[in-house]
Amino acid sequence: MKNNSKRFLLTYMFTIFLLGLSLSSYLIFRFRNISILGAVLFGILIFAADNFSVPLPKTGFVSVNFGISLASLILFGPSTAIIVTFVSSISLRDIFKKEPYYKHLFNTAQYLVSICCASWVFEIMFSRELNNAFTPKHIGIIFLVAIIFFFVNTFLTALVISISQNIKILNVWIFNFAWLLPFHFFLVVMAIAISFLYKAYGPFTLLLTLMPLVIAQYTYMLRTNERKALLNSIMHIVKIVEAKDVYTAGHSVRVAEYSEKIARKLKLNEYDIEILKNIANLHDIGKIQVDLSILNKTEKLTREDWSEIKKHPIVGFEIVKEITFLKDNADAILYHHERYDGSGYPFGIKDERIPLFAKIVSVADSYDAMTTDRPYRKALNIYEAIDELKRNIDKQFDGNVCSKMLEILSEELNAAQNRE
Ligand SMILES: [Fe+2]
Image (cartoon, rainbow, N blue to C red):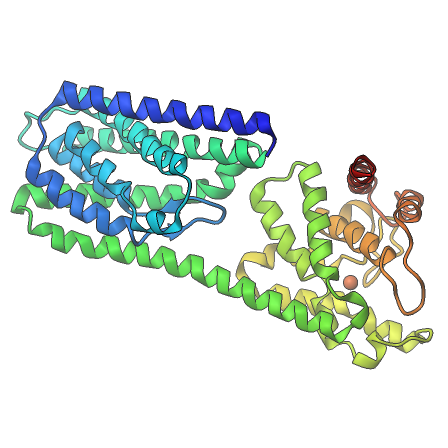
């Protein structure tokens, strides 16, 4: 990270810290009524819940904390909700992770800012003197403050990721947070149920309402772990395929890296980039079915050998279309050897019929193949490879995609010259 953006990031974190501190103190002072029993019970609950939260795709955590904070807000008001939310920031995991103190402070502060904004609106609109707190109007208010909390909370966090990783805030938000919205609404329903039962039958009902919260959290943990485990096995398979072909060690990883760089130049969103990286890693997985003697042949390949090799996009497609979260983009593997002018294989389709992901993988794949030694020829140097890419614009490659690859290569050359 550049010095300027680091300074900006620290200033931003410090501002949020001050804002969290002043908003919480002001609201506690303004609304006073703290329920000691509520703070203790919900404090214990949120402390327990926080230590079972689930890692998000890139950073941050999803947990049922908000459901508990919201329930304490409905039952006891802003002061108690702020104290309960503060307790949720005392995380054992963070202490053991030994992360920098300013990260802890920022996390605590951004939660406090979010709950303060939500609490303030809630207390202005919600009439506590009513016997039945769960009228349609009140339920509407609860959902409204839940939306306020969600947007303030995810925006403050997305901004940190956006500054530190130099990624557009909207991309960060879509990839990291948008998918949490249904879960967030589920937590609102849980919070309404918790507060309704607590009000009607007393504190012991917390034991009953805790179970669905734990189950909800566990389900999300399973989903995240399942995807992680699947991706690990995929990478093992890629290594097996590459071990068969001694000339292509590390090829898939490099193709994935270049594909990601091209995708960033094309301004694709983070979710698509993640899918594309997986597709690029798997683009040659169909080679698992090609005979070892063909893959490692040092003499000229026969027509039969080629017809065997040309099956690998179809075999790869058949494998990858079985992976749930990649199946919609598996055709990029099927078409990664198609050429813009229609002279590629297996089908000879041309220009706009070739999907964007296939065009990206094709350029990244060809560049890496050109710049590594193969049994039948020596590697080209970067200048020769650039000439080769330029010569093939609108023949083998899509002009737009190829121009992004050329930009990346010229940046790499500049960076290398600056280092010398
Ligand atoms: Fe291939």
